[in-house]
Image (cartoon, rainbow, N blue to C red):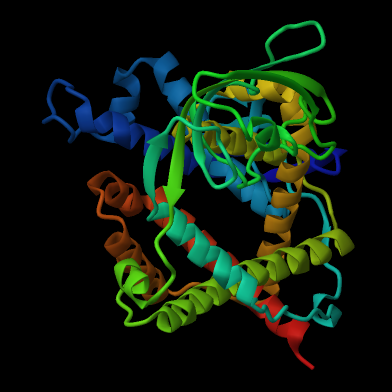
Length: 428
């Protein structure tokens, strides 16, 4: 076999591969053996005819097509290994020359992972944040628990802070046209909760059931829905119900209704412990993300667009699924953002997809250098733990599939690699 390479770009290459009769002999034999299994030839039992006899008795066009597929499948991986490239997709194959079973020349154009030059990641130093939970944070949780346990009584008086009201509302722009995402029906709103934009709840204090109030507000500049950010919106709000909210007293008796504790002090300790655990987990995730991001940014690597495009599509599918869980379609979301799907992909998804792909390549390179592996025993333990967590038979079936096991193994390898990088970063 002879292989020549031509670089189309840092991430695309064309291999020209030539196989001679010796290279092709095994491919032809493998194809004939497959034909022989079902061949019914006079004078021979089915599947027992010699290969030279089988060759003379099969459709020659079909034989050549099968041979070409097999020969290309046999030679291409060898050529890729010889050329020391790392393909990231199936190659585009073009047959350039074919002398039946004697010579085969074909080209294979393929996207590859370009050159990777890692920064000296062992010299990057970072400190993990040690989180603290304030008394106010604990108190806020207690207040939320009291609110959830509160008794509600419908009243006919004017609404005041602390009440819960049921409203219908619509938002219109300066032209009087309805704005997507600025409306709601039978929406429960706790006055004083500050869950709506500044000024909204204040406008409804003093309203009675059946009242309709109209007022104009400007959305904050940093509002999450870009189409509404810094926009002036006129709201029409109808109050359908006002409920007085009576919260239980924050005492030992209340604490016992919340969890397996004997006193309010015990409940506060449990809450502080849970908050500390969650805040530390989030801080650790941020630390790891920033560390990998810094290493990626300081390294030099070329990734093919094919990998980024694949990641974009994966992220879009996940996003659509998450939206469906919230009862929203992609089109509804895009209308709220004032974007087309193409704009959303380009502005929001593509940059993050490129970061993820590059980070994945960096972690793979580090794993190779550090000789980090996931043993079969480690994988099996993780699989059993996951199966214990997911009782859904369909989810367990997904885990048992080869691709499911590969995904879990890949995730574990990344975890171990990040842990190694973190140990270097925090070592004094």
